[in-house]
Length: 140
Image (cartoon, rainbow, N blue to C red; front, side):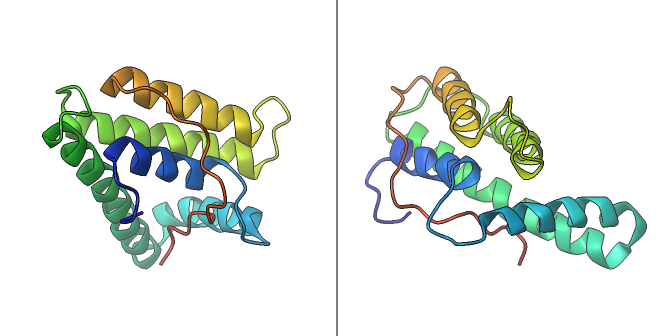
């Protein structure tokens, strides 16, 4: 991501990593792991702490891209924290549909919806889907 020169490009890549199949041979298993993590979090303080830390890092990654884009004049002056929560929630909700292989919500459609939301909120031109990206691995 650091090699991508624009904030819009980095955000596009981040959304692509969340929504589109990548080069990882088992991307589906990562989403199933997330479903398990979310389901166990309310019943286990240890799992909840892991989930919270991971979500904090995830939201900080989004927020830092938004702030960098605003500073560079690429993005509109929206509230970065509010946008971060909305995009994170949107991507997580779409991830559930991807993990469940919902035929009405295939990965390309999730990408299109998420990038349309981000571009509309931040005021940048949508870029084509990133190629050759790896699948997001949030649980660490």
